Length: 253
Image 1 (cartoon, one colour):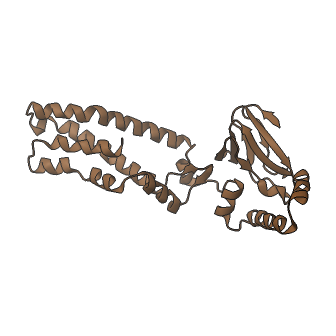
Image 2 (spheres, rainbow, N blue to C red):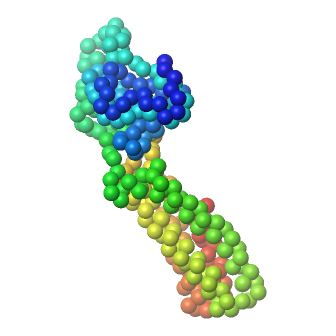
Image 3 (cartoon, helix red, strand yellow):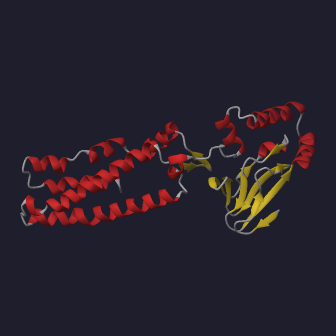
């Protein structure tokens, strides 16, 4: 077992792998260039295919904080297999390892062996990565939008109680519609573009991004909250148009 300090390099890209890595304690990052594609925690594995085949590392493995890493050498592992397993089982495990190294059934193999997809976001896609600066700034703006909803919606009820005409509340409503438009853009980005980390793997393709989005969000509530019932009420001179903005809380709770 080896102990690493923060930012220590455990395995350098291009270095020959002679076995697998097992995280015993701490957190480890898998990088392609300068982009973090995966984070590993206790009992996560990396490069298990190297227990059967000789391979050069395609990613850099770096300790995020203080971590303890167990290195399983291929020679010793093969010796244990030879004494405990028959030839058919050993051949089956080796074939699976070869399939991984040749990128056959990539998604299934990555989940089996714990290796990250060989994908480096480029162009505008790099701004959609969960660790990018752009995503962090965007999340801060989302937080400001939620703070605005928290104070502006209750405040607008006072106008209803005081029977204030719409002309005196138009500024608050218009500013609210600007924030609504921002959250509409955020909804599209969350559904189709924003990448995420799922079980240590980078989810970057549109199909899986949408699947995860629909699993976590309620489509009916999303649709109802996007309909500007308050604006429609204003056109019909509705006095209680501010009450319709309560639906915003149901989506961004």
